[in-house]
Image (cartoon, rainbow, N blue to C red; front, top):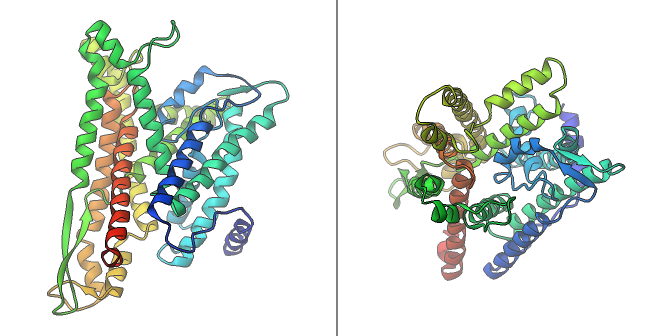
Length: 448
């Protein structure tokens, strides 16, 4: 296995890459590169695939994941960031199951992981391109099967390199930028879109003005509530006292409640979408097709009559033969979402160099120690274990409940997951911009 890993790592060196900057990128240039990537992203979402006959009605089964995967089925963004995220999921599972012997706590191990992730993401761009067609979601015109697969793959490959561009020369993460942009555009359009004939209904705001039905505003209320909860949760943290030396200056090491950020939800929802995609692709295969269809049902938040579950229950007048099966499916979905988020949250902390051992090593190298204890990495690690593992689990459960709970009330505007991710992403963009400005105004403070 080690030989295979080394071979794949060497192969990844032949893939085109965006070189890291040799010096600090000025803040204005970061804004320009970020805006450029965003403009290209929106342009890709408007370019229709050449050679596509039509999109199947089954596309509606994966619509829930389009916004969080920066996807727009039928355009060059058909697969979106799905291949990139799935490559990370597969490798995390392989490392967690010890199928890949990679130490993510070392720089060499993380470099190998990133190299394998890139080469696997490139491969999955083409695999998912074929799955979209083989599952019947998209129907190609005669002779356009291979060109259609290549177009879908090229769209995701462009996003892969745009993500590299933003990560090295822009602000924050390209993947996060595309998710936030897609969700924001969807919310705006679903709220304020005009009535266009009989095919395009008016948005929520105009429908409310014409009917006076307050239930229509429930998704907008859900957006506001989730926004406020996430902003409040972003400010919750535990301060661990630290000092520089035995009698050095005292300080605090903050461990945020959302220590895992929103990555567990991105990974979980991407996995759920791919389960449903593979369910469609394998639906005619005996036994396997039945199993995949059952999993597809379990990882789908139900709706009632095109409305969210809560809206449907209100309209139906409470519990009955229509709402009870949907409630049961929603409970199964929430349980699976929580478990999946906890697993991915744990992997993300380990992979992101945020584990107790990694943080303890960073503090020790910085000359820090816990006041009242001797200067020893094992002591620091023991203290951190009281906080980081529980907060990792609680934070993962919190984002799962918030994302799933939002899906209970948000329908026709976005998803709870989309709003959760967007608010968290915007908050981190704000932090990145604030840090950049601080570095400009006070270089010494920035180094500190």
